[in-house]
Image (cartoon, rainbow, N blue to C red; front, side):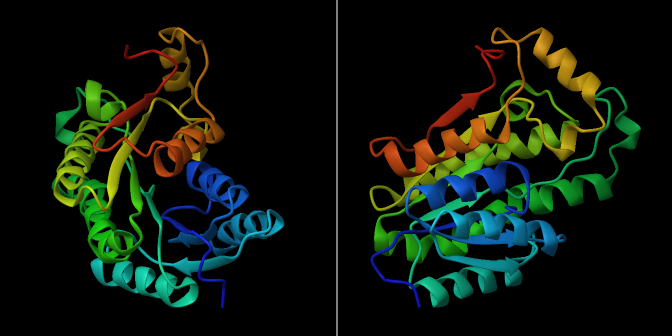
Length: 247
């Protein structure tokens, strides 16, 4: 068992990318971390090794964040292992790369796949974790996207899903203040596996970005940690981290 006074962060989709960077930053700040993955146990264990090397406790749990029963089990396991929860980061997400003009490719299956994880999954995690977060005056950070603000991004359903995450963030912030703060970070293009085969999208975005570079996972992790741990008078806000493209 971990000492009860240690803070605890649960990061969904933390096997790689933004989630991994966030898990490591929370560990550096003295949080014990729940690492969640859906497919790659090996990647998740690498994240966990990084948490341990930073002196923090870690629990690795496989769960599909788009399935309510698995999310509830994930949160229960975190509470059982660490005694509570201080921060929830909803990072797990999916997309389909479909040109916005190709409406016929946006099938019901595409809509269902994206909305189930990105929107309903975010809600499931917030619902399951809320009692624990209320008990500790905790916080939630949802990973949205500038796609949800500008209507851009990998596909129309993805942009719509992230717009819904932004609205969900504001609704929860109103409903559960002052006990729980709820904010979101909205990245532009991030150099992760998602965009590894879509360098053209990255290059186009960077060409329109004042700071002339795409984000790294560490850039977004810093924003997540700021909202979760430091911005104690901030709730219901969307922090855009895109190098100034959408100013």
